[in-house]
Image (tube, rainbow, N blue to C red; front, side, top):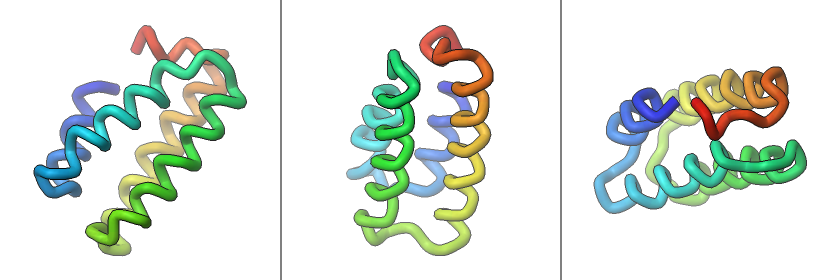
Length: 83
């Protein structure tokens, strides 16, 4: 998770937004309930759009990446903090 998150952050976000993205991703990763994870999942996607710096391809790639991990979160019963 962490290595992929850093790669996606560095690839798609300008330097001034990288720390915020990492912080939000880590909040998502350490969510303790499915409700919290769902909320943070949607918050990340909304933040990506609100930054105005991502093109359609970047949004699609980030969306696919996050959807994969969100599926895993549901599969693993919320144990993403160990990933």
